[in-house]
Image 1: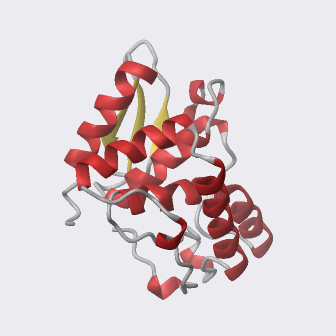
Image 2: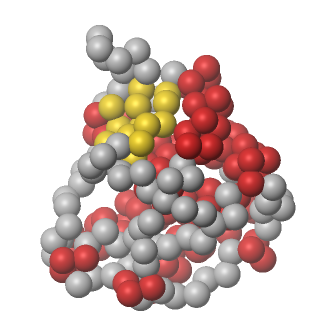
Length: 186
């Protein structure tokens, strides 16, 4: 898939979630952000970065983690420290990123795309740790065994139909530990 192949994803997401959650997916020019509805915008907006399909799936994953009250806050009210985190800050980042990156991996599989772990800390030279990658994989396995949350399942079903991919199974999620050089956000 090319970078500009995000339009079908936007159409699918908006078809599923505009009527049910008053939320739209929007291709952005800059950094990703979630903006709740306000006087100027009647819909909640998930704005993903630079037209990257992977960014869209990552931001959708954060939306799926956020509960109803957090979906009323800009960027869900979550803590975020940009690129350049210390090792301790990176450990905290990895702790809170397990669930969204597990959802993101599931979405990528449903869309027939390859998933890449994101440490989101390139300037510090800290890639996704082996422990983080194992924790994300373990969370994926747990989700597949216990069942997916409603919004995650809705999008998985939509992606599978859109991209004609098979039902998800644990065998599709093979952990091959990545180094930062293996990762590309596009």
